[in-house]
Image 1: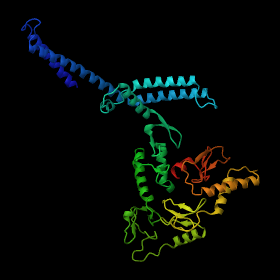
Image 2 (image 1 turned 90 degrees about the vertical axis):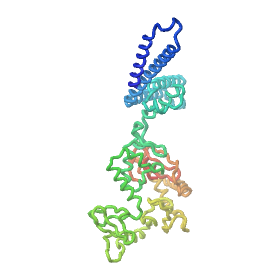
Image 3 (image 1 turned 135 degrees about the horizontal axis):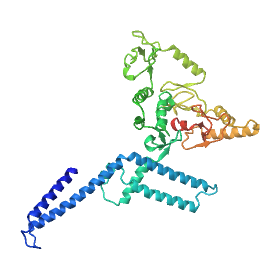
Image 4 (image 1 turned 90 degrees about the horizontal axis):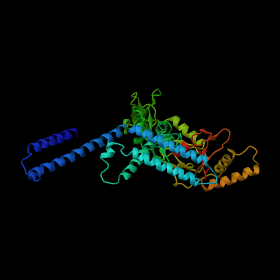
Length: 441
C-alpha cells in the first residue's frame, strides 16, 4: 500500500500542475468539459487516497493486536479470574444452605459486573488477529455481533479449565479434550499414554470407554515418547506375541519378522531366531516339541480353578462377580468351561461366590462392634442386590463416597489406596478410583 499511496500522491501533483497551467483559458464560471473531467478525477483520487490511508492504519492496528495477542490473552485471563474471584467472594458472603438462588441485591450486582466486563472485553478484543480481521468476515453485519464472536473466541482460549485427574486448572491450549468431553492437562494425558505401554489394562488409552486419539496427544509428546508408544501399540495390539528367546534381550518381535510357513521369528535387536510356537530358540530341522513349562503352568491353572482365554491364551482368575469374563484382549467367555460367552449351558453365576462377595462388602467398612444379626441382615440385602445386578456394566451408576476407614479406601482394580474419596457403583458395590473408572472400566 505504500507504493500505491506514492503513486496516488504523484498523480494528484500532476493534476495540480495541469490545473495551474490551464488557468485563464476558459470564461469565468464556465469551465470546459475537460476541466470538469479533471476536477472530478482529482476528487476521486483524493477519496481513494483517504480510503487507502485508513485501510493501512486499520491493518497496522490489527497487526499490532495480533503481535500482542499473548499479552492480550493474559490480560483477559486475569480480568476473568478477578471477576470469578469476586463472584465467589460474594457467594460465600451471602451463603445460605436453605437458598438455591442468591439474594436479589447480590444477583443484580453480579449481573451488572458481568455486563460491565463483557462491554470492556468486547472493546478490547474486537480485533484478535489479521486473519480474523480480513479473511473470516465475508458478510457485512453489525459490529456488535462481530465483537461478541471475538469475545467468545478469546474467552475460550483465556479461560482456565479443570483437569479431571489432578483437579488443577489450565488454559485451553494446554489441555486435551476426550471424545466424552472430559478435559485432561497435557501431563496427565501423557502420563496415561506412557503407563498404558506397561499396564495392558490401560491400553488403548481411553476415557469413558472412548479411545483417546493419539493425534490429540502427540503435540505434547517428545519424538522418543511418540516412537516408543507407536511400537508398544503394535505389541499390545498383537494377540499371539513372540519375544526374543535370548534372555539377555527379550525384545518383542513384530509380526512382519515372523515367517508364516516355518514359524521362524528373527529378533530385530540381536538377530536371534525364535520359534513362534513354543517361544524357545528355533529348532532348525527338528520338530517343535512345544513348551513343557507352558503345559505345567496350564495344568497348575486348571488345578487352582483358573481359566484360559480362548483368544489370547492369557490365564485369568475370577475374584468376584458372575462367570461372564471379558479378557483384556476384549474376548468374552465363560469362566466355567472357557468357551465363547453364551455358547454353553453353564450357570451365569455361583451363589457361593456371590455370598462371599457380599460378606466382603459388608466387612470392609462395618464397625468392629457391629451386632451379628445386623451384619447378617446387611449381607442378605447386598447378596440380593448382587444377584439382581451380577452383570452390571456401571454406566452412570457411580457415586462418591467420603469419610473412609483409617487406612483409606482401596481401589479394587489397581489396589491403590485413596484417602479423600472413592467411587462406588450403586448396583454392584464395586469400589474404584477416579482414574480406573475413566481409563480402565
